[in-house]
Length: 338
Image (cartoon, rainbow, N blue to C red; front, side, top):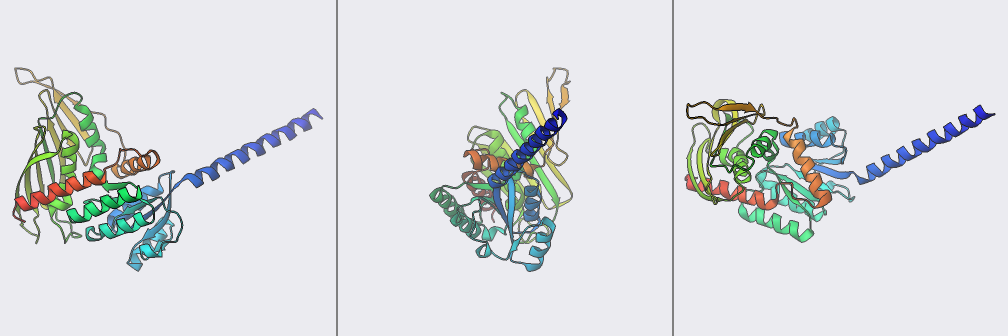
């Protein structure tokens, strides 16, 4: 009799645990952030891939005007596809990733704000300052976050290099970002496509806005500028430079930061960061490899976005940051005669 009672009690306990687990799963599903990706080019597909890995995200829609692209992506990600934003169902959407061509950033972003969504728009924020300002104003009007996809800010090597500064103030920041010409590119040159990443890195590490800009630009193989040497001085006195091009046969992404007491070198591709310090009069010094967190930058960016959405935080790249980066890039083009 006792054995039968123990069995019955054990059965009730198991059923109760199963019920509680099921209830927790329902609550978790209800609280997941309903997300759509708009634009399924290379970057849009990468966003969809990463978003599917996140327990806090429910990918509820993919949008692209090309039926073949949409069909392949919908099948690959097991998510319903829509030919346009207008075709999205009239159900709540929390978070929209806008990865359409730059010329369409403004309209897609405004449309999703009309849907009461928080929006992450790919870099650069927009093709013009006027477009960027209208997007920022709309975000304020609907009380939603406008975030910009400057993903290199979330590169673990950039983060490790910035953390290594400690109390040391940067004196100079030098960034090299070169590689072969990308066949996909046609409407912008290296300043808008590549250097805008590094403008954001410079502003982030210097913790200051840019005070002066000098640009030397050239078109070697492309209709737009494919080579750029850019120099800056920040408002707090940091000297910075960007060397970028589409004429180098291999990719190189390197960040160098000099302070009065250390020199930091970060490879943004391999994510290895070295610190040189303790300089001696005989020319010797100490070199050490710094610990770098192993995390995909795009995943780190979306995690920061989710945290900001849930807590109204500031860990994302804001619309105002995107505007300043765009303004600096456009100033570089004007200064270089483009």
